[in-house]
Length: 500
View 1 (tube, rainbow, N blue to C red):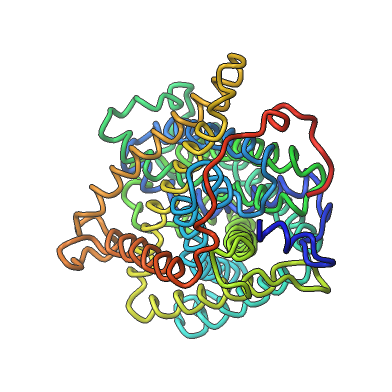
View 2 (cartoon, rainbow, N blue to C red):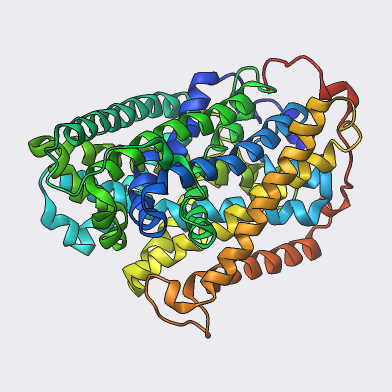
């Protein structure tokens, strides 16, 4: 195939064995932006389900774990940095594969600017420059500068990126642990100043608030786990590439579960459900509201936790989009120049800068419309995420279809589990479309063509993808000559190998 020829050319490939399992795990964790994700959803989730917010986060973990299993087993037979794009193409054909790749690439474009904005805002708050946060020009200028710097780190090398991420995750987790410990101590000491509640094991019951509330909570909760697959996008650059990236993805979801449950329990216990529900519209700034109450003069600790979370994710979110574009280009599903790899750094420099450039343009353009429009574009992410995760789950079962009856373990972990995960995400996708069709459910509350802005944005991105796909198919039909296949029986249970 075309991508095999490109990879075999001297110095044309990504740098093999650049990072190890721990580095991949850290990148997967940072890509989800744990502190930022928690800050963004804890208020709205509590507004929906009250004290059962931790239970909703536990339930949201289930489809993520099932899809992470699909990523693990698909990576075993195809260590391609394009992940979903490559796997779905192999299992279900080029049309489905191209759309999966498009969805991944666009998620990066939609979210990078917002992450940088949050990183800048919380850094300014942490150092006492609150007035700068209200200055739109200064905040946006610093956000663009941050995107450029983090993109540069991505291009300079995966090893440097991993080292930066290791520091950021340590700071983030340390800050969150301090917050959790102090919050719970003050709850039991009775010094919160809020209507605090002592934690109970019953909070872990996801069904405690009822079916309708659970559905709404899951729509928010399931997407705070999004991003862990960045570890698998680095498969060609990871030691033990057939096994380590997939394991890193799986373990990322488990570590995230523990982190989310700990912080959610601490926040609900300290602030109480009434305060969180009343301030649900504050989004990520709910942590800024609580920081001083929990930590007093040490509130900068929590503010820096969210800041480091968003800074780290600004960098790692670029990885899946750029690697997917690289994979698509070398399969001739995109113009060849997107597949260029820096001879010096052995990273996909062209696709990385393109992703960053488009993300900056999107961020600045949407901000010109309104801040609400930026939040509406982030809400549209749920459609893309659910789509390509569900597509990957189905592709796993389809690609392994001749091996699912070889053992009960294979049937459950490679077949049934990924399909159930895909089914849950498809259900959430449908629910998202229904909710987003009502303009009242958007941040702006305005109507675009009689629909909510997030749904219009999602439909526009999908249509743009279909149009670009058809145009490229007419210009270059090489990629569309590929035919679906099945997993090679010699690779399914083969020992893992080193390198890409």
